[in-house]
Length: 274
Ligand code: OAD
Image (tube, rainbow, N blue to C red; front, side, top):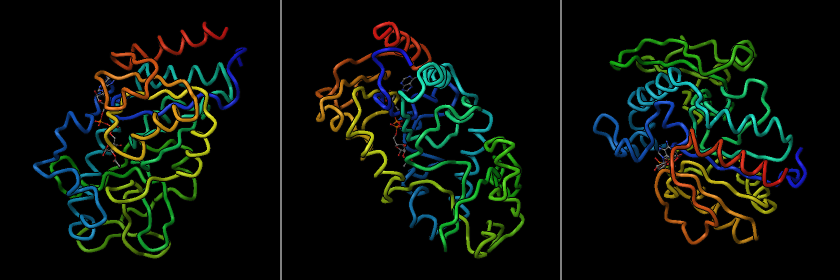
């Protein structure tokens, strides 16, 4: 580790903007709509109860889109920084696309996925979580389960990988191997509590530098992290294409594309501390 960078001193929060240049639409760019449905209509527990096929079609499409996307230089810059400064950086992501993990095959910077993961499903009965990278529906909405590339080979060969995609309930939806109950995407939906909050709160309580990248600052609790970090005296940096509502809590605002600005900022950090 470079002198001046302490263990666990940096906390990075990423949002959809870091994956935008990989070809994944951000929520605000998509206008909050999917096939004329408001996102809230397909990303809630009530939606899953009402119309699980619609919800699985939506997440199948998201799995397919994520599978064809590739990590970009912003994802890579974070991994390279973490490799050069072991233990200095913690990454929290709101993204479910798996691109941070795919940029990081050696698992140097395992992200805390506070909104879940597209490559996992969960039993609605007992809560068991499985690696599951099947798209159950194709782009036309037909039932056509195909394996994508969201899970690594080692995840696929693990016992928790869901091989039993042919188990079906009421018109071709997956059942859990544990309880034979419906599987749902392991995603935090509107109205649900994000994952790993105690761990995240501990990190925010001790960070010296908080960096927000590619997030609009509109969705809580993540939208409150800048203020929380500022409140304990951390330096706060925001890298984003446009200004966000938390301006009062940002020490340094870096406007621009994540693929360029993230690497530039991390290099400047290393030279400031070098
Ligand atoms: P948003 O779509 O709300 O915001 C993305 C932000 O990234 C915007 O402020 C853009 O200006 C910025 N941006 C776009 N392209 C960029 C680029 N190339 N470089 C840098 N910045 C760029 O996405 P999030 O803030 O991630 O929650 O949304 C937060 C949560 O809202 C999501 O995790 C999701 C959604 O509801 C759940 O699914 C639970």
